[in-house]
Length: 243
Length: 243
DNA sequence: ATAAAGTATTACGCTGCGTCAGAGTCAATA
DNA sequence: TATTGACTCTGACGCAGCGTAATACTTTAT
Image (tube, rainbow over all chains, first blue to last red; front, top):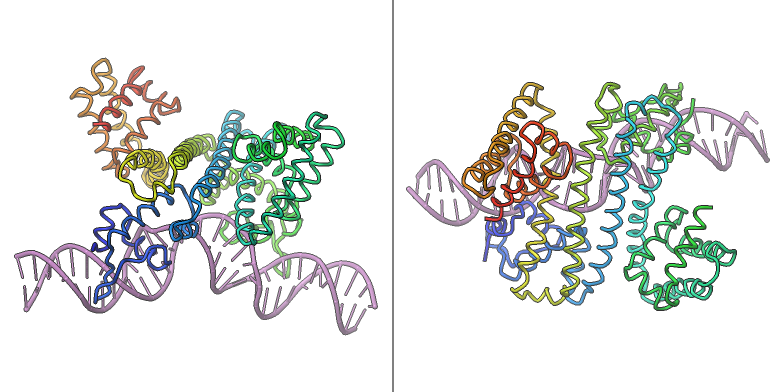
């Protein structure tokens, strides 16, 4: 049995953190001494290690709780989602860096005098940055919402989404900016807005990128809607958003 | 004169945000109506635009306040610092993505059974990830601390830092893992710990990377300590941290 | 027995707002 | 003109994940 102090030293987390984790029910000690001291055993220690691992990956504590508390939790899937989130976040930061570099290059002080010209460029950058950032937020919202639905409901929605992709797949030899494809894009956008979150053009565009980034999205879409369906969908979305 | 509602619609920020900005003194309306309604003029509007721009770049509101409230503020420098911060953050996220991918590839569920082998690899990843993340936090701390010091004090510290780099520069033809270089690395580490923040080996290593990333660090060091001094310092630090 | 070190609980602080709650204001309609 | 509906105001609480006291035991060592 180890005290908080020993646990703290061994794992590097603060005593306060251990107390907090106890309070929120993330990690209870094995037992309490007569005077109320927290006492941790090896099992608690191992659980803490897992917690710290997922914390490193920036999972919120609530998710970590779910993950470590149910041994049959699909960790692989959780990891994949987190990878997607982190990737979106990374892209967002990259956009911000570009934006900052652009600003610096053109002289911010100069810019602060409100010359109307060239500010368009900034807006463009900013919009781009916001878009990918937006997706990550909406994506989170989507994940939470879908978690609140029953498995059947989710399966149904997924099926309907897939139906749309299947339609994309069927016309994937046609013109992505043609009428059929464009109508489908709008259908997709409306569907997402209705069932998940408000899907603006910018967010839609980011989704398009996600479909072709080689992740499970791409694989799933291509598997069910035909090889190249994901890429075609992306091109159609691009055309739709640029118009 | 525009009301909060109009401002909100025009810029996309919420009314609550405008009220909040007023309260914290970031953006006061031009005047208040007899009944206490906030009324904004064009100047306020432009100021808000600037605020939003820096907010996009993830500057904390306190910094934004300093930036927009003093016209002679060195925005270029602020941008550069922010770029460094964002870059560190980006690297951190990249490490996290690698970590998550590695975990997924080796099967997390498998890992959760606590096989002792291979966890070392994870620790390595995690340490790497933490290191760059750490730097960004320490960097922030450093910036805040240095802001609290007088210009002379800062100049003195900078000079002393440069003296150390100059020493690196002087022996930059020797062996980076030799005794002289290693002693210098320790000197640097101790100096940072004493005057800025606790500089662990991991953080030190990240600093080494920063010295060679082609930013102002590199340029400054090489300019004052001789061409290649930054790169030599990095190699010496690497040897020091690996031992 | 007493000091030093460790621990517990409670509670406020931080960031940047979202989200009520309760109440007053403004413009237009019945 | 009275009412309605659309806005606005000022608090105040909530969130994430702890850090940082403050105050009061408990355990260990001397």
